[in-house]
Image (cartoon, rainbow, N blue to C red; front, side, top):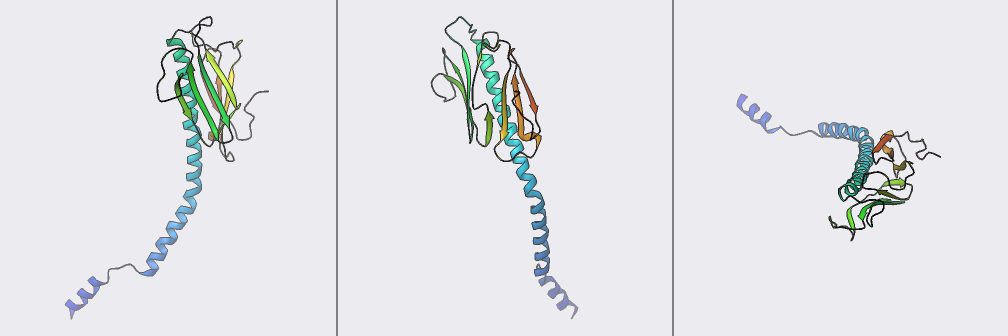
Length: 183
């Protein structure tokens, strides 16, 4: 008799419907709490990665101007051209002389594009001289703003990059409702 009860208890090791429903309810609750945070995390990381890409483009343009020793009077110079639209931005570092790489268009030594992060102003050309300074800047800084396309919900989704006349880049996070471009 004892042996038969032991065999029956070993056979009944499944999951009951009640246990399954409780587990599914807990999973649903956790997902309800986690999904909005995951969406914010994705938006924050998208802006951060494209911010880093833009800073890299600026540094490549500046370093190429210094490396190629392109002077104001010379035939060659390095230009960072940025174009933005309602879906994102594109950037090309081009030179008027020399080799190109990375599978970019002819004359472009580095290229990048983005999606879902908007840039202001919509078009800007940034030129560097052989010292890495902004060309023809009259000592005015260039300002570029990045913002996620969907409604901004955190300061990690709104950035201002300031390219100083010396060619150095400063970056700051802005509040969602802050104006990026100085009037």
